[in-house]
Image 1 (cartoon, rainbow, N blue to C red):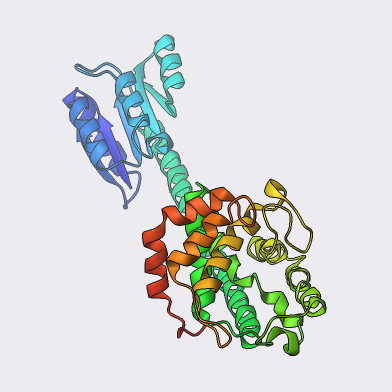
Image 2: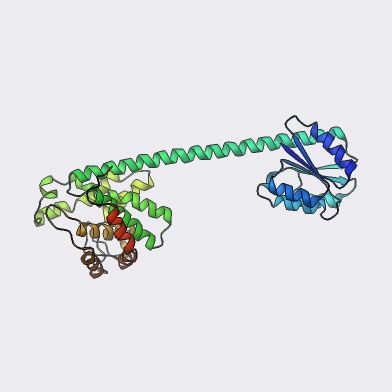
Length: 349
């Protein structure tokens, strides 16, 4: 613990140093005649306790007290001001500036030692509490990170389960998730929410777990009856994910439910229109359709990225939210980079 003593009187300074050194064996005492030098030292390394005389040249005790309080961490440092008897107005002003305690000249050695001992004990307790708070905050961060990692593992496993029943690749899941984040960023959404959308987007088709293989894996065009069954997968996905206490899983449930809605109201399962469709559903609709069009499947060849981009443009106001399409195309270089980074032969892990 470091005690800083500031007094322009050499005799007083020597006396105060002797008393301060008797406070404890772990105490380092540093003293200054010049308050400006003392402030510079406190700025470089904040002391644990300051003892300051009021009447000093260049900078009086009030000014030094006020300056120390403005330093990083300075509000928590005990400051003892030494004043002459009867200087009531000086004490009142010192209290307003944040003085912790006072000593009256002539200083009683025993009183000073005890007061400094008590204030240093409070300082130690405060620092220990701060360290404990940092430790607790770190433990909370680690626990939160572990929960998030488990949630992410659940998402990946659910996405893999859906993938095994649908001829889509791990590359598709990763690409559309990154595309969703690019759109969200382009819309100006908060970065942490964009990250959440990226993590939740892979759950969009988890409801396909409830669709019969004969329909899900059919290479040709679905009949009207078969398509009616296929249109159940958003509701199934929502039912699988609904009710979680996790923000991430709840967002996944929302995305699963609404990513097949269309901007003009012709989508499913609810036929919602425009802004009635949750924004996450509108975002993922653009990301998912673009990647589905440009991906090669056993039953179709992939479109060129130019043709897929044209399809998005033509689908503004009908299939897609125009703002989402524009945000996606504005990030075109990153779109192409994402396609190259996550090729179709990438497995989900």
